[in-house]
Image 1 (tube, rainbow, N blue to C red):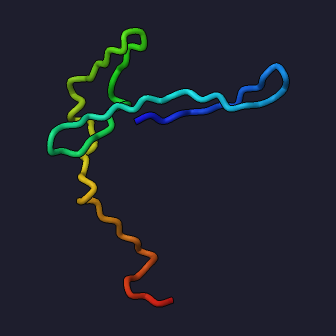
Image 2: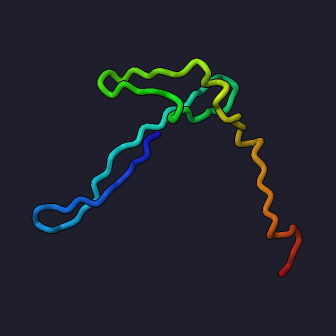
Image 3: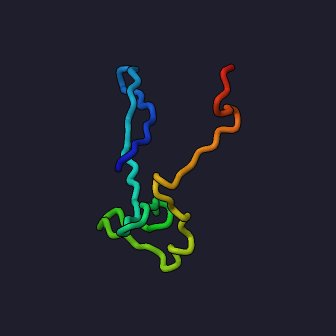
Length: 83
């Protein structure tokens, strides 16, 4: 998955246009477990593309949940309310 960050660039003509750069996002994907983003935990060598993950990364990762296990409770809306 790729996201982008953009900034405005002023051209010599005075025209302004967006200039965007990709932001790589790295996920740990294990069988039968939810994917967890690890982008902030790893070190990437931009010249070689080699990725280094710290040994203690499993202790630092948030606990992921499957989408089917996510529950949202909206406190402002009551079930069955006809307002």
